[in-house]
Structure formats: C-alpha cells, structure tokens
Image (cartoon, rainbow, N blue to C red; front, side, top):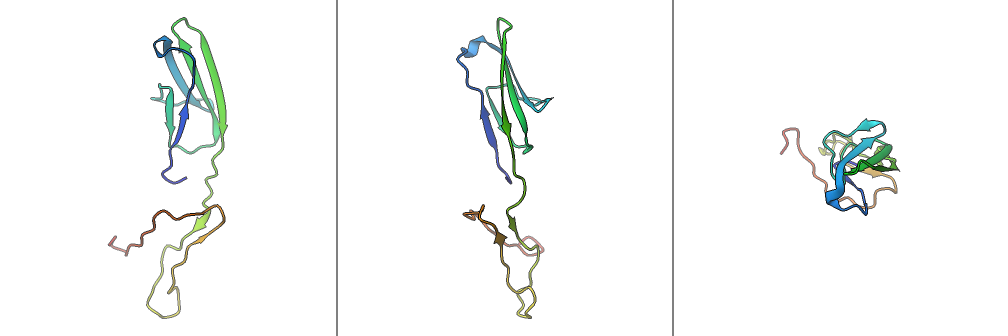
Length: 114
C-alpha cells in the first residue's frame, strides 16, 4: 500500500446543481477538505467510509462502505549488504510471499545516495 491512492466515488441521480453539500467521513471523523463527489484516500486506515449528500431542499442521503487495508508488508528487504566476497552478506536478496507478483522498480543506493 505504499504510495497508493484509493478513489471513492459517490454516484447519485441528483443533478449536480441540486447538491448543496457533500461530506465524507472515515469512521465518525469528518474528512477535512473533502467536499466533492470523488474522494482520494491516501491515509490507509481500515474504517467505514461514509458519504452524506444534502440537496438544496435540505434532504440528506448517505451511504457507507467498509474498507479494510492490509498494511502488513508482504516482503522483506535487508537494509545492508556487503558485496566484498568475504562470505558474509555478499548477496542481496528480496524475500516475499505469493501476494507479490511483480516488482515494478527496484534501485540500490550507497550510503551517500549515489
């Protein structure tokens, strides 16, 4: 879930000009600044996400979805290795389970970032 954005979209039959307000909640907490029909989630917390629409007549409708994030990392990468042929930590190897099916990008840097 690193650098991942989840997009929630509220689908309604209301004409956009008839919508007075849109509120998004994560659990009981109002998501500040979220006021459109589309909300981008970058805070990966498992919760019930609720959207509440209020029309210009004052009627409110709401719906919710339960989103569960598995924030456990399905891989392990050692943070150091020393390819100096002394037989100790000479090989860098990634360890991962069957949840990982593709490595999109992988880079190795020295201690100075080069």
